[in-house]
Length: 352
Ligand code: F6R
Image (cartoon, rainbow, N blue to C red; front, top):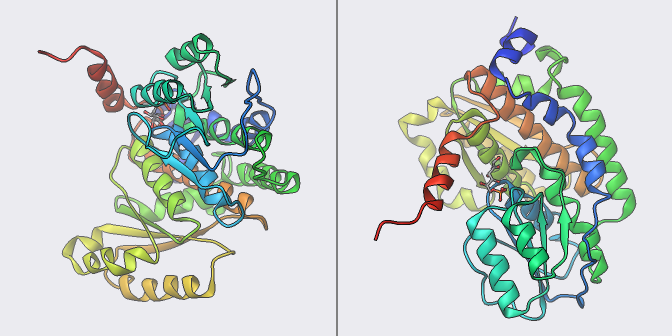
């Protein structure tokens, strides 16, 4: 029996019960759909939306950007860093997204938005960002606290939909949201630890990757989801992962697949039923070209008809796969000690 099917091993290796948080992700998404900003965001239809966030709190912005890329004529820019780009002016809307509310880069983006008088809303469970939003009388979406930011993706994504609709940017039809939530419910049942490896795609994928370095490749719709898989693997399993997107990686990174290290790597192709025929063909050719040098190749697909369902379920599969990789590698999937140390040291005043 694999360790992934052993409840005692899971209890020992996952003392913070991350598996329960992951199993409750569909419920989190449902609750997230009900969250509103207080007071409501009052802004004209923006020319650009800037989501300022880092790590897990930026991932909701990535999901939003890729979800709307083919349907909404307002660009969604995800800003990972201090301050704000020049395009965040009076005709923009800024969503300052930080689950903890204490991320220095996002606090700086919020301050710049207030100084420039750009419409800004804070999306946070608390911390200094909540305090600053109250002090500056700016709207805030209050998120339920107590999660790891990367495991709060529902809270960091869904509240943006009514926020944008409120300023004239309709993003998600209600039936697409309903379909996505139902697909997540069904997928949760298929991926939880109680479902044995023989019948569980996330466990099977983690076992196929094994000790190899995962290289996750997506297409135009799933390239950013590949990046999210990479960061989930890094934070949960504490191991390196690569991410890239077709067609761009066909023009550079593909050359590295003749190097000797390729046998120690495992390719995961993130496919999408909505992908164009030329992208489907590129995936097939890529498989042929790198397959013989790679340690192994797997494919993963999202579920459902609508783009939101396909993207969210594929992301959720990545969350569980990274969780099971953590268990296989005997890493606590919850805590992130180096990330915490980095934040702590950056908070202490710099030596003169
Ligand atoms: C930790 C995690 C990190 C954080 C990032 C920013 O679980 O996912 O990537 O998201 O360090 O912190 P927050 O999200 O609190 O602004």
